[in-house]
Image (cartoon, rainbow, N blue to C red):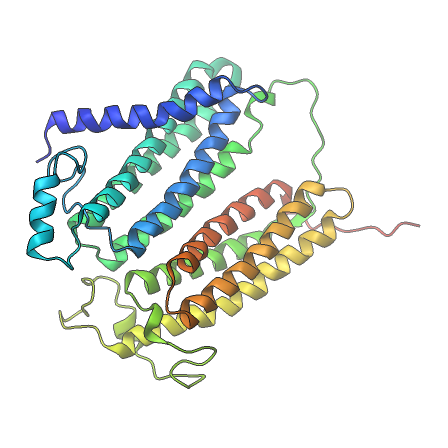
Length: 373
C-alpha cells in the first residue's frame, strides 16, 4: 500500500506543476484570473489527452507497474535500480527507463489538472456571493469527474491495460474536456451585469446532440481499436484483406470484459475478431463524416455573414474532419506511424471541443431564416 510520504511527495510535485501556469496567469493582463484559469484547464486537459495517447502508443502504460508512484517512489530517479533490473530481465518488456518517465510525466500532468481544478473550486467558493452557487456546483462536479478519471487511470495499471478500462479512461478524458470547455465558455462574471447581450442561436440543438452521439460512439470504437491493437488487422485501404465486406466475428470482437489479447474464454483473441473491430470503426467513420459534415456546412450557412465566431468554429470542424480522414488512412497505409496516430487522437479531442463551442449558438427551437425583401 502506498505510504503517506509518497502521497505528500506527489502532492508537492502537483503543486509545482500547477504553480507554473498560475504564475503566468497572475501577471498576464486581460481577462479575469478566473476566466483565464478556466481556459488554461481546457488547454492542459487537451495536452493530457494527447500525451495519454503518446503513453499508450509507445507501450509505456506499464512503464511503472504500480500506482500512484513508480516502484513505491515519486519519480523514476529514485526507482532507477528497480527499473533497470526489470529491463535487464525482460529487455523487450513494458518496463524501461524511458517508458517509466513517459508514464510518470503522464501522471504528473493528470495531477496538475486535478490541482488546477482544486484552485478553481477555491475561487468559485470565495466568490460565492458575486457569482452565485452554479459556478461552485459546476466546479465541484468537475472535481468529482477528475477523481473518477484518476481511479480509472489507476485501474488501467492495476488491471494490466484491460481494454475496456483503457477505453473508458479515454472516454472520460474527453467528457472532462467537454465539461471544462462548457464551463469555461459560461459568462459567470457577467451574471450580475445590468447590460445583457442578446445571443443569436441559429443552430439546431437536435443536430448538435446527434453529432455528439455519433462522435462519442466513433471515439469509443477508435479506442477499442487502439486498446486491442487492431489498427493493422486490415492492412489495406479501402478494402480489408482485399474485400469490401470481410468476414467478421462480432461476438468475440465486442466482448467487453476480458483481458488484453485474450477472448472471453481466456484464449488468444483471433485475427478475425481484431479484423471485425477495425472494420467497424472504419465503417462508422462514414457516418461521422456525413453527420458532422452536415453540421459544419449548416453552421457555415447560418453564421454568414454576422456570426464570425460560429463561422470560425465551423471551418475548424470541417478542417478537423479532413485531418481525421487523412490520419486514419495514414495509420493503415503507413503501418500506424506515431505522428499520424497522435494527430488522430488529438483531432478527436479537438472535434469534441468544437461541438461544445458550437453549443453556444444552439437552440432547441427551430430557426427560420427570413429572406430579405
